[in-house]
Length: 248
Image 1 (cartoon, one colour):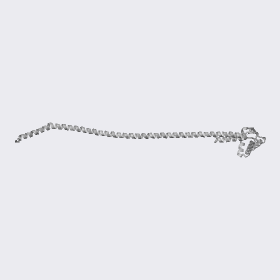
Image 2 (spheres, rainbow, N blue to C red):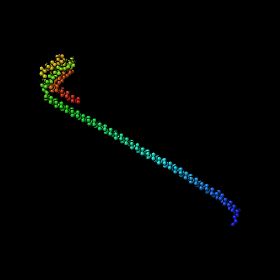
Image 3 (cartoon, helix red, strand yellow):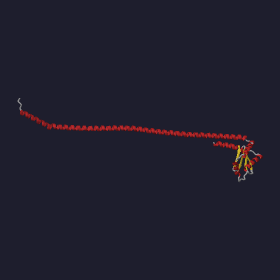
Image 4 (cartoon, helix red, strand yellow):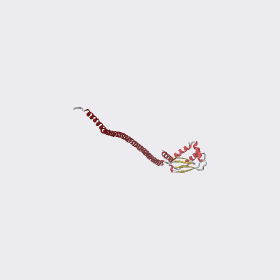
């Protein structure tokens, strides 16, 4: 078979025309469609990546916020526990202090009650002792005991200091009242004269005296000279003993 160059050339030309036609009317539109499709897919992928990145960012933010929230909750629990513990400790301290104060008050009250009871018992004992002593001395008191007391009084008058004598003299100045002398028993005349003489010597003047009997003295003398008085009797000693114990 002979090669027909004209036919061959025409075939080549037809092929080239076909290729051009295919490229121009078929391949290019298809490629454009493919390109647009690829672009659409790429855009979708880019959007998906953007959404994924944003989601991961939001997830990270959420996780961080959740972690911060857990830390805040833990801190809040610790702070609340500390606050509750501090309030509990303060309440316990206040309660302990209140209990201690009540104990101190009770202790003071009990001590006061004990002191009062002891004082009452002491006063009762003193009163009973005084009553017993008064009863005993009233039985022991007699005229002889009183005479002995009067002798002691006369000795004391004799031994008065100059200052005491001056006070007695001052007490009698400007008064015409007699000296009042009381005794538990009747004083004999000799003793009366001795008492008056002792007073006259001290006062440096004649003394008028009134004698009277006062059984409450038990035994002894009570001498009233103006605003001054001298008492030496069992009654006075008992009274002094009672007053001294009352003061203590």
